[in-house]
Image (cartoon, rainbow, N blue to C red; front, side, top):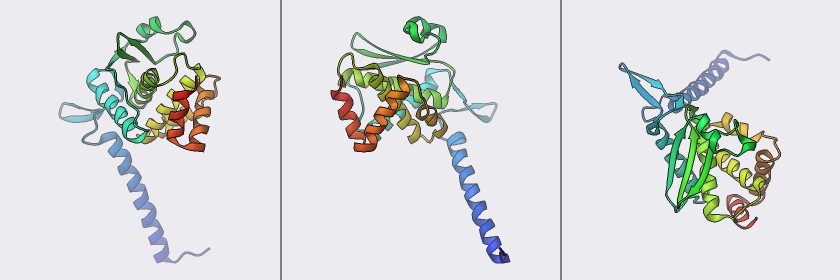
Length: 212
């Protein structure tokens, strides 16, 4: 095929513009002025790649809660919550024997408080997904049948994490959830996703609220 000079220039210009837009979007996510993960050091700004303090964790956690309330059926909790960053060793002491050495987050409900424990030094997107997963368990405590099937319980929590990561533009992290194939988290997520495909977000919420 022969492309005239003007057509070639127009196509080149379009490709260049698209490329620049992608770069700008990436930079706005990574280096944006209002990005809570940016830190100042010696007059320069650096991207904070891990979450290792409550100061960094809280804005991300609150952003996650906002996503759920405004974009995922009004998911929220009534009881107060406590968020703690802990070492892997500390989390292992609390985790069930089956999952020791594997967990990056844990949820408990004690004395009318939701307690969410997340390993420190997680990457930003991993922290966001873990926070959403554990917060989903808090919502389940207030809204779902007691002793709900573990596949449904973990599948729903992973679905919530998946939706939050998608909302935040963390596509790669969300795909890690999408392609899980284990018999608990992966299977449960596929069940919840199929319910959403058939009836939407509200159908998912109605299902998990009533299914033991």
